[in-house]
Length: 217
Image (cartoon, rainbow, N blue to C red; front, side, top):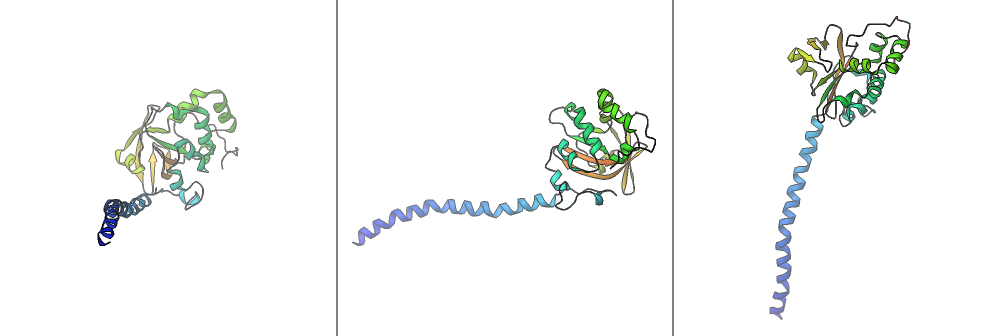
């Protein structure tokens, strides 16, 4: 009988010996999971500028952390002051001009900026009948690569997709682009994109607004 009991214990010992490495591996894997989550949270996007306080924050739909996981065209739809620009980008399909895998920096004029530049009739005509002019206008607001606003200011210049080189200078809490636009909420992140909201429209098209239109939001 003692010999039989000893023989019965041997399979159980072998099973425990085989199970021990698995238990150790599971414990090691569990102990390294938490730091990854902490690192992700610590790099949440931080937007800056005088308009940021009026835009979605915290857990509101369209907050910067939510937009960081969206494609650029979808992220634009969630920013409430970019309805005119977003519609133009969607209508023109200009983002499809970017080479595959190439990031983009978007200088996005607000609705107020468009209302101060184009009359409603002029803008509707541009959107409906002049697709090439519209695409050229929008390319004046796109830069190849994903550039934080501090990097653009540090470089001093940037070349937009329409081939024009603009100056970029820090002006206190904002950044001046060319000779007319300032950032009002910079450094939104999207998938393979940076989005900087600006308060004026860039590009060569003439101002046609007369102050009587009501397109601004």
